[in-house]
Every structure is written in C-alpha cells, then in structure tokens.
Amino acid sequence: MQADAPLTLILGGARSGKSALAEAEVTARPGPWTYIATAQAFDTEMAERIAQHRADRVPGWRTVEAPLDLAGALKALPPGQPVLVDCLTLWLSNHLLAEHELIVVNNGLMAALQARRGPVWLVANEVGLGIVPDNALARRFRDAAGRLNQQIAAQADRVVFVAAGLPLMLKGG
Amino acid sequence: MQADAPLTLILGGARSGKSALAEAEVTARPGPWTYIATAQAFDTEMAERIAQHRADRVPGWRTVEAPLDLAGALKALPPGQPVLVDCLTLWLSNHLLAEHELIVVNNGLMAALQARRGPVWLVANEVGLGIVPDNALARRFRDAAGRLNQQIAAQADRVVFVAAGLPLMLKGG
Amino acid sequence: MQADAPLTLILGGARSGKSALAEAEVTARPGPWTYIATAQAFDTEMAERIAQHRADRVPGWRTVEAPLDLAGALKALPPGQPVLVDCLTLWLSNHLLAEHELIVVNNGLMAALQARRGPVWLVANEVGLGIVPDNALARRFRDAAGRLNQQIAAQADRVVFVAAGLPLMLKGG
Image 1 (cartoon, chains in turn blue, cyan, purple):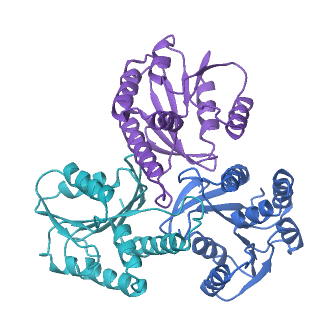
Image 2 (cartoon, chains in turn cyan, orange, blue):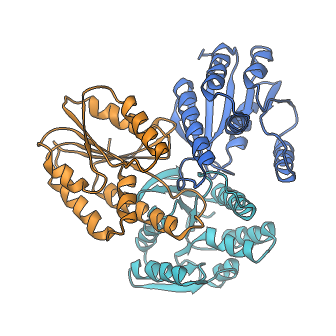
Image 3 (cartoon, helix red, strand yellow):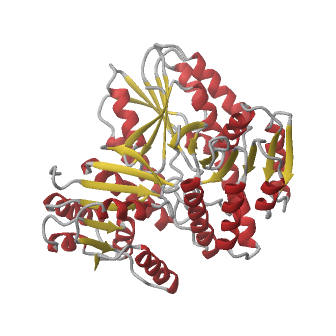
C-alpha cells in the first residue's frame, strides 16, 4: 500500500477489545471518519450487539452499512478519509451464507483495498484456536476466515493482535 | 496498583501452562503463599482436575476456597503476603450460573484488588479465539470473560500471555 | 538438542499459515527434505485437505506416512537431513482414538527427538483458546494437546507462534 494510505489489520478474539483499539487509532487522525459496518441484525441478540457497538463509539463517525458489497463501499468513499471496517469476519460469513464464490469475493476486496487512497483499518476475528468444530459449515468458515486473514496480513502495512485489550505487533511498527 | 503490591494477570488457553507459570512467579517471593481456588467439584472429572492441580503444587501453600466470594477472600488476607487466584474465569462462570449481576460482582472484585496491600496474581482463560458457540449461554460467558479480562488488564501492572508453557509479555516488564 | 540439530515447534491455529512457514524454513536449508505426514484420510473432506496440503508444497519433498509410529519414522531417517512433521496434533488425535496410553506414546516421541541427529520442525495446533467443549473426548484431547505442546516446547530450541501467516517468537531467535 502507499505510505499515505497504510492498511492495518486488527486481529483478535471475541471481546478482546479489537474494535476499541481500532477506533482509538482511527480517531487519533483528523476526521471525518467512516465506519463500515458489516453486521446484519437477523435477530434480537445481534441487534443488541450492533446497538452496543454503536453506543460505544465516540460521536463524529459516519456509518455505512455493507454486509456484502464492502468493495463497493470502499470505492464510494472520498479519498484521504480514514475508514474502519468492522468486521471482516462477519462480512465473510455473510458471503458464505449467501453461497457466493469466496475466491472471487476476496479478490474483489483485495483490488478495492489496493485502489483505496486513504488509510484503512480492518477488524477481523481469529477463530482457529479452539477445537475442530463438529459442524462442516463451521469448519469451512474457520478455514475461509483463516485464509482471508492471511491474505490481508500479507498485504497489510501493520498487523496487530489484541488480547485483553492489549496490542501485540505482528507486523509493522 | 502500588509499587509494593503489583497486580499480574496470567492469561492463556486450556493446558497452556498458565497455572505453573503463576505458581513459579509467586514462589520466587518469600512465603507464606496463599492459593485462592475458585473451582467447584460438581462431578468426578472436575474433582480429578482439582486434585491434579493441587498435587502439581509445591508444598507450602495455604489454600482458600472461594468459588463466589473472591472479594471477601482477598480482604480477609493479611497484608503483604503473595496471593494467587486460580482461576478468574471459573469464578466468573460460577457467578454466571448463579445468575448474579456480573457488573456488580466485577466491580466488587476490582475494589478488593485496589484495596489489597500485597502482590496478586490472577490466572484467567482466554476463551474467545474459537468459532462462535452455538449455545447462547456459552456466548454470554465468552463475552463476559473477555470483558473481565480487559477490565483486569487495564488495571494490571503486568499481563502475560502463555502458550505451550512459554510467556509473552503483553504489558509490564 | 544439539547445535547442528535444532528442534523447532511451529504452533498456530487452523489455517494460520503454520505449515507454509515451516515449509519455508525447511526448504531454506539444503535438501533432500522429508515430510512426515500424520493425517489419515478417513473421509472425502480429509482426503481433500491432504491433497491440498500436498499440492501447496514445492517439489523436492520425500513424503513418509506416519499416522501412529512417528518415533519409528524419525529413527529410520538418514542423519543430517531436515525433516518436517505435520502435524503433531493429528498424530496425538490418532493415538487418542486408538486408545493408546498417551504418556508412553509421548515419551517414545521425546526419546526419538532427542536421538535424532538433524534439524526437526514440528507443526502443532493450539486448540485451547476457545470455549470448553461440551464433549468429554474433546476435553481430553484438548488437555492432551496442550500438555504435549508444553512438553515439546520445553525441549525445543525455537518455538514460533503463527497468526495470519505471521510469526511471533516464543522461544529462541
């Protein structure tokens, strides 16, 4: 990526503080800041999680919903503005459930990230550190999430692993 | 926390060696050492795990059982003595199963830790790095454990992540 | 281990890039290289995973199948040649399913590693960072995998944790 448009991947577990860390890094830059939300509120629990995440953010964010067309959402943004995508793993899950061809979808995202002229933060879940799931779809999802994280990390300028709210640098400064 | 009473969080997965590392750090200090056990032996498997943990410890520990009233157990200890709490995640799980209000319970623990005049080690599980659990209670537990780990880590002087028995410093020296 | 025969443990989650990292380290040395495969193709999904792993490797590897007798496979190799075992966790799972005595099996492996005169890379899964599994066999497996990882890490010259394809040194340089 370009020096003026670094790509940062923030990787962590559930409730690891990865979103809060990403938001703190983004809001340390001049705004306006764009938050690309990939979550879909299929049920009450998910709606509550989304509302909680939104309530936790400081004011001043513009929110764009992109459960599937993340590449389109990135292309539509004015250049230069910091953007946070939260989260990549839900976006992947949305495409998997829609039975889309993941290689095509991931390549579309990689192209949009390379074309983007402005700093981007991507929040993603690490989901591969438990027992092999019983369920075949969960195993496919776990593999796909791991592969996407690797693909993004290879392109990223910075990769940060977060545990208990604390950052650990995997790549970059 | 005070310089003479550092708070250490030892975070890791199942069978990562986190208890052994915490015990080694505690017993490097002059005793007597207090071990606050939060496990409850509901069944044979759990009883065996508790007996195994106890057999693994060097002699010289005083054991206090505190499946729920961890704040009370900390307050009852003489000042200055090193104390190890093993583990925070089981304690949280005990309160969740008892349907206690977790915010109140966590705030009680934080107050007891801040009032404690002596070094404290807390062992906790990282449980958020696998696939999203099917079960709603497991999801609530996973979220609560992650939030508690963040809350403790923010107050701690040192946070150590353990994998395969090896420490990785997340905070402190 | 001996200076000319370092033992490296590469630890990571599913699709973390741990095999690719191990293969890159091995092939940076002069060949011939031996790949000891522990996977057994019980079903189509597993057969596809094995074929995918094999297709991902650069040419020039000799493959030895050792779903159970890993110690024997290590002893049968000519001295000096670099060898990659992928993966230790599947090998352990094969023994667990065969109801072998894990302490005996692990000690046999440790003896073979100590006797080996040549560099060895062991790839293993970290499986203990999710929610406690419902299933008793999965809990036994998770405990056994964690214990084996600790046992190997204590002997290893280098231990590398891999996430999103990026290495994090836990031990060694």
